Length: 169
Image 1: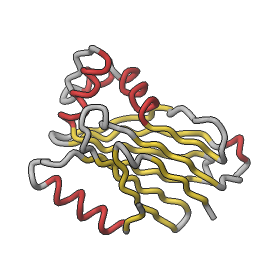
Image 2: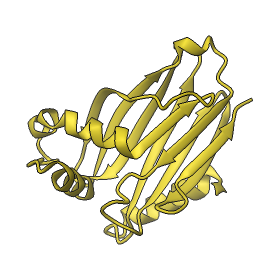
Image 3: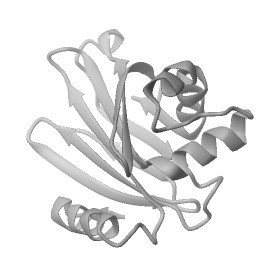
């Protein structure tokens, strides 16, 4: 489903101020042709993400402790690589390269990148699967915002409707 960026933003803001009765994440994808990379950030509710990592990896992640996040970054990256798939121009799925994270009490942002140098600036299609946190919450919604040049596209995904096929201009 395609939604306007303003609609997605209003949905996100309303969920943050209501003690998060809904399960939602935001994935931002910025296609940077000049640097030949795709920048990806995941914004997740901290407590939910801590639970999913601890459940899936039998770890003891404390999301409020930066040392604990750094200690568990391989598990975190593995989780994202398993539950977020990105194909470029119908090629194989590309793995994410970790950049950094930042966190506050309610939300944590994880930043990744994917190189596109092998495409020689000829990126024409994205295929995305986003199942982040759907293994923990069947009602999880994942908002995806894709920025390419001066165009933004917004999508709302869930456990059943979890794929995006997007042709780029």
